[in-house]
Image (cartoon, rainbow, N blue to C red; front, side, top):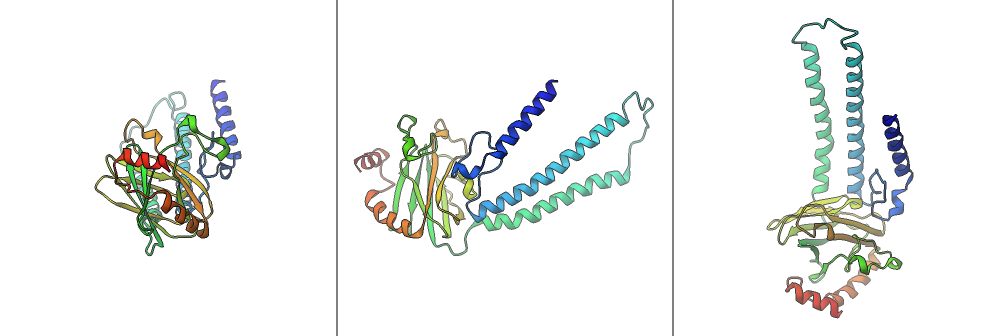
Length: 282
């Protein structure tokens, strides 16, 4: 009875989560969601395809093992088989259980290696975004735009304005604005400890390591707001350094640049208190 209730609850939750359309979340996860957020970039689409392939492989392995265990329990239990056979080797079987896992791993590697190269970097990016992880906030620089740079802090829970569409633990004071249909190189580093820059809907997840410049790229397919968070334990406020990316048309991005260069007319490398005072004054 207990097992039946657990299975019923599990399948009910699964059906509920699958019924919920992740697209309605506008770039962030919804309660009870099991599947991934809708892909908003070619990188995310490839990752989702690879994920689904792995699900089929792992699902087949799980089913096979369950069937095998049930067969062994029913066919070779002490009542049905009171006198077990005594042998130590079965060469054909040993060859099979050695070769089949190798073939599975080869299949996975054949699919994964090209994808890793694809995700690595864009050959001819149209613009660059540099991301720096701090304890505990993010810094963004646009090297192609006269050194435009700013810091991005989480909006405190007591200051969340739902009328503006702000989300608890996800919305930030200064949003990263990027154009759609543009190959964007993303350079990621850390200023103090290791952080991790992750935006699931865009297929981005890369460590921000002090003294190292990691690189990936993104091409956003459609306008919208996409959220992420630091995905590497980096200290007491690890859970409070979200990422908010707003994808807009190229025309809107050009207009935003004009305003942003006036708004963020200070050096990101300045003292943190100085930066905060400058931002507050604006």
